[in-house]
Image (cartoon, rainbow, N blue to C red; front, side, top):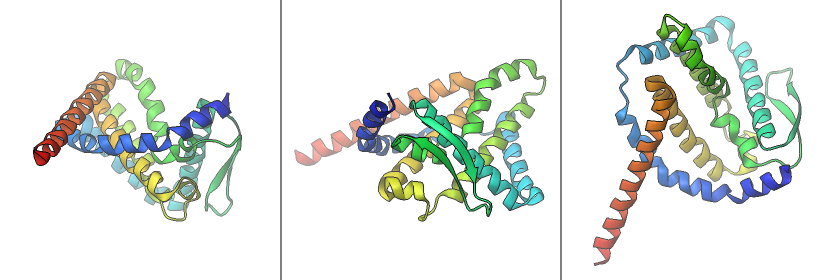
Length: 228
């Protein structure tokens, strides 16, 4: 089963990258539809700033070790989602990195997932609607989400570099497209969720689709008018 999924996923590697490039302008344009001036966004920002404070208090080395664990856990989750057997996670004693034992050849989603998927934020988002019902202070709930978002972004920023073996494995061009485009999309999803929970995410994705169609129509009209 894992070999079949690896074949299909790797076969779609560049078609996915090309599609993301087509959608990227819409990902960026969609940010104008967000209302950033509300309590939820302020709370989210506060949670993100609190994470930055923990880096100074706990020390960079401690936070870096936790980021490596998060990185390897994300590899592991996507390995299981694509029907692979994943073994133990190991963090290098010097804090220079880590590894996850994977049975099988793997695929580009497993390799690059830590660079575009905020694992802890995603788990929190899945349980957040239930927490919101029970919580009397919603802003506190969204400040925790902001903490996880900052944790994710700090992890990505610290681990994306030219010597990163995952990026080298999939190639600089492909990895760059996937990391940039999907992070713009994922950040938009996080903003949409902060605005209106999962219904906001649905609205956001529909806006992206609408904007992409409009952009394609504009490009088509320009090409048509140029050729006439």
